[in-house]
View 1 (cartoon, one colour):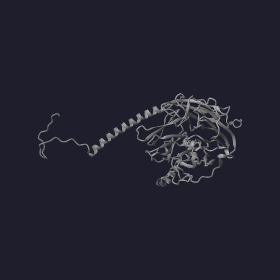
View 2: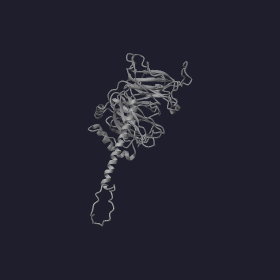
View 3: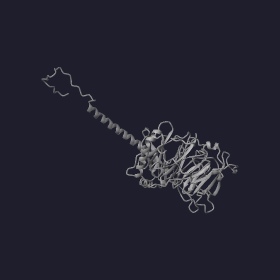
View 4: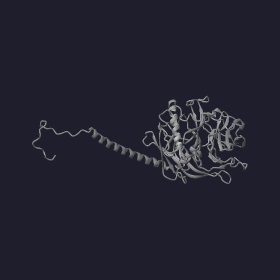
Length: 509
C-alpha cells in the first residue's frame, strides 16, 4: 500500500499547524535526499524506562518458536489504568481435561496477572482454560476487558473489583450464537463489532469461502462492577461475504471509493446522526486502509505501484492531510490509541531489516517496532524495538492518558514516560473538537455505504460529462480564433483580377 506525493497542508491561522509545516520544510530536503522517513530524526535519544520488570519474575515460562512463527496469541500487556498492568501469557504443563470437550479443541492454560506500577508487585492472579491459540483478550477502555473462551465472551474489570476480593470476576457478554470470527473495539471504546458465522458452516479459523458473516454492533456501558455491570446494547447488524475491519466508532464510520478507477479515493465520514462529512481525497493505487484514531482524525495506509511498500498518511476532519511517513514493507499495523490527548502508538512487523537511515544493531530479518506520534503534527515521541517479535502485536500498549507506553523487550516489561502536552498541542485539540460529528445514538446503518457510493458515481459521471462539454466548446472557440477551422471557399469565376461583374446573381439559392 502506497501514498501519493501530496504535501501536508497547514491549517490557517493556527500555531500548531505552522510549526508542523515548518518542521517539514526544514527536514524535507535532507530526508528526501537520503530516503529517510520525515520524522526519523525526532526523539533520537530515548530516556531509560521508568519500570523494568523481568518476565521471569512473573513466572513467565517463555515462548515456543513454533507458536511464534504461526502467529499464535501467547503474551499480552495492557494498561488497566496509569498505575496497573494486566499481563497474560500461556503456561506450560498438563492441561486439565474437560468432560465433553470436542477432540478438535487445542486447549491450553493462560495466566492473568494484575501488576502494580511502578513496584511490579503482583496484586492478583488467575488462570483461564482456553480452547485454541487465537486471540483471546481485548481492552475495552476504562479498566474493562473482553475475554474469549472459544465462542463464549466474558467481561472483567480487575481494578474496579480489587477491593471486593474477586478482581477477576467475570460476567457473560451476550451475543449472537455462532463461530466468532472477529472482534473490533472502536477507538472511543464505546462500540464493539462482533463478527460471527453459523456454527453449521464454520469452525473458528477455518471458515469455508462463501459462508456469510454477520456483523453485530453493541454500544458498551457500565464500569464492570456488581452495581454497574458491563452491558452491550444491540445497535444493528449486517451480513457480509467475509470479515470486515470497518473503521467505525459510536458516532459513525469512514468509507472510501475510487469511482473513476484512477487511484484517487474520495473519503467521507458517515455519522449515525447527521449529514455526510466529506474529507480530503487520498492518492493510492490500492484500496487505502483507514483507521480512526480520534473523533476527528484518521490514518490511511496507502500504496503506489506494486512494490508493497506502505505509507502512513494522517488526515483531520478539517479536510487537511497533516503529514505522511513511509512504513516500508509491513503487514497489517496494530494500533493503541489515546484520543483524549491526540496520540497513537503503532506497531509494525517487518519481514526484512529496517529501512531507516541509521539502522540499529537490533534489526533482524524479522523485526517489530513501536512508534508513538502526536497525531496532528506527526511529532515522533518514542521509537522502540520489541523482542521477541509477536505477529499479533499484543506486546505493547499506550495508556489512556497518553503519558506512558509499555513494551516487551529482551525478556522484560518496560514502561516509558512520554512528554507532556505543549500549549500548541492543547490548542490543536481544542480546534479539532469544533469539527467533531454529532454524538451517535440508535442503530448503525451501513446501507449508507452503497447509497453514498451510487450517488457519488452519478455525481462524478455528471461532472465528467460537463467537463467534456466545456472542453469541446472551448476547443471550438479556440479553433476559430487561430484559424484552424477552414473558411468557406468562394465560388469559381471567369473574371480577371480586379474586374467586377456587370450583373449580380440575386436569385434565391
